[in-house]
Length: 577
Image (spheres, rainbow, N blue to C red):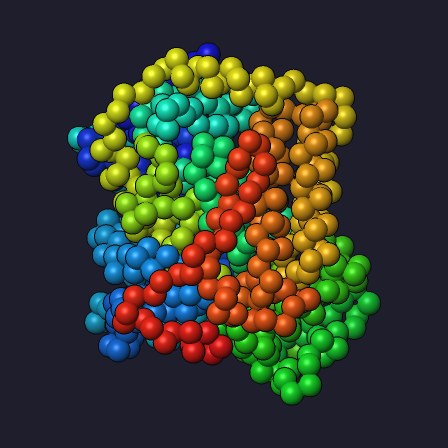
């Protein structure tokens, strides 16, 4: 078995993973980054597409009333008061420095004539603080960080080495300490080991848990599952962000401008169905317009009825060829589309979609997991030597999050995770890693003669989308939970590569981690809509739910109420607006 040695292993090469690797190397560590794709050209930070990829940073350039404190309030309120306050505050306070850092390293983000950053209003923000450069924000961040990793490797004091096209399957933990990890090649299934006293999980979300998602290939929640099996609990995992997105021929978030141009929305029968779902007293035009500043599904305003309508039409079988419904702007004058929707118009035109004459097919798509492995402000978990950042981390987001916070979070806690991992002082035992690899390969087993892991996932992921996405009920969540457990059991005889069976094993575990706390939470809050209960933002549910793995079983526990800082008392009244 090929064995690598380093000081810090980073799993994932998106924005958070690269920032962690860079910081650890700047502190003098030898870093290895394992990534499922090609470094610098994979991961959600690089591949996600919308008309504006935002980095939320309270510079106050667009409105001097904005400040990190105001940003902190917005994070807490949009999060349904379920964020861990000190984590949310850390993002708000450090985001400007992290964005300026990227700019100083060559980011060249949008600025006005005076040199101030252009900032726009994003969902969940009371002031315009979304920075970036349109749809190019994510790729720019990745390119900048890759160049910085190259420089530190050449100039020191540390180094960053990449293991491309590899999957870390599990951590090697003994005595409550990390000793490294083992994985397999994506193409050849050959096992390998990485001996390291420090590990950073930044492997991205679990998009493939749901049949309709906008994640890149390989987003199978590996970081969450590894953390759980190592003994680190997940928190807020019932909260999953879902947004309307083009599902064919490319993934593209339908945010902002699309909803402000009075779109025509129809099902496969040609029916403009949304009016059927709008309750009395709700203005349909207002609900659609508000959707432009409420991209992710939320129970906080009337835009939720648009998402409910689209979800229901698709789940009941009135979706089009690619499980979506149609949206058209073709009734608008061409010059209006070209001017008002310039960024998405030009981007989609490059991919063969002409908004001036063609309808797009879209659906509510999973786009971010708000929960993850519980961390403290130094990105530490309950396991010595294990740190988590980016989408794999939990507590910094609550029931929802403001637009731009995912990228800000990736840099703030990516930096902190890398710094913390570089200071681990225990020695790693190579024998512990080799034994973990041998035991892990035996547990996953050789390929059986049953259904392929791919087919098992396809069935399971559709049940997850129907039962645990936009509209949730006791019955639907129970069905999703049973689908997850059935997928887990079927894997014992599944055919397919070690890598694919390991990925589906992770997803079957995580399906339970979503469904169990979602079924426990008998209220609606943020992205969590329980259609079978009346309670919304129930004060009795101002509590996080923690998920652990105990003797192979997923156990969920409701924690004590969130204690708000004294200067944030009274925020509950803002939850409804």
